[in-house]
Image 1 (cartoon, rainbow, N blue to C red):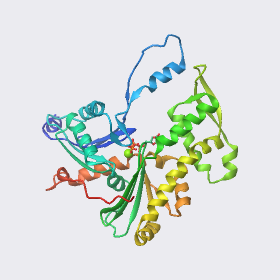
Image 2 (cartoon, protein in one colour):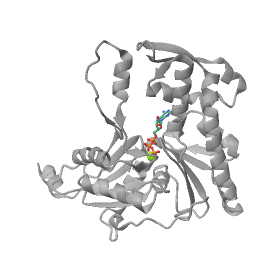
Image 3 (spheres, rainbow, N blue to C red):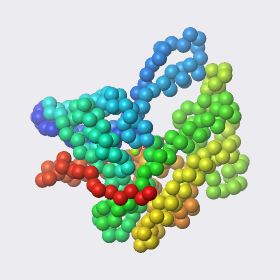
Image 4 (cartoon, rainbow, N blue to C red):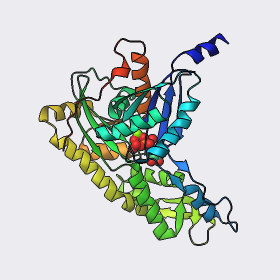
Length: 345
Ligand SMILES: Nc1ncnc2c1ncn2[C@@H]1O[C@H](COP(=O)(O)OP(=O)(O)OP(=O)(O)O)[C@@H](O)[C@H]1O
Ligand SMILES: [Mg+2]
């Protein structure tokens, strides 16, 4: 009873990671983090004229995504999405204050949209920190170390690279190649070859073929039994997918992606590059969950790659830690300002 009253009278603090595919919110009131899809379902027709799996599949797929490549493109729906989440985390008479994260390569205008969406959603104050910094903290990197360390966060829409040294981000780059590009390629290849529309979970599963890419023999033999919807008959089916077809579909994207990392490393001053050679590259984000992607990056960069313990929650865990560290301190997180950063081009 007394605890409930205290909750009602105290101003909650929330940390927000508004991602292209997932939105994660931590609330200081209950100490919990919630994961939510960043897409909103739009029902076009509630019932199919005849029973048709494909109709239901397509109907379920009709969604709107307020974010593209990590930034808000639809303020109205971003606000609706956030309002629901902010309200479930409120439990107080006072509006919560938010510590949000934004991709390091965002413009002032794009961060203003995020601020606006959160204020419209019911928060009283918004401070924004770079997503990479939060990811590095959440991944357990010690940012006070005097030598350079590198983080690569592979999300659904964007990949961020950042080099930290002595608490600062000294170089960074944002790349518009991430998990959704791998998915699109796998999906269209299977649709063209087998006329089968795959479920998201099947597509995700297929991206794990990367783990056999480094072994020529293994990449040729195995066949998956994957379920989806026959696009012509409109029925659920399962089909056999050759690993080689999937590898061929994603290889051009992986090539572009790894070349971006290699080019980023090449542009670094020698001293920084050699420090990273020692400390390695830490991977976070959904892409870090893809089996074999770490080994592929390591083989193409010749640098050891460390996958963070909970890569999907690195950003929100880092934002949560920043929030908890600064709560109650003078000149706390409410006064955070976006740092001056050097993008490597
Ligand atoms: N176990 C897994 N295997 C393969 N892919 C996965 C796995 N877990 C998550 N993903 C993929 O990771 C992506 C989501 O990652 P994440 O939550 O880091 O993205 P996001 O933060 O929403 O996007 P962004 O940071 O680009 O705005 C999705 O494309 C999802 O399919
Ligand atoms: Mg993200």
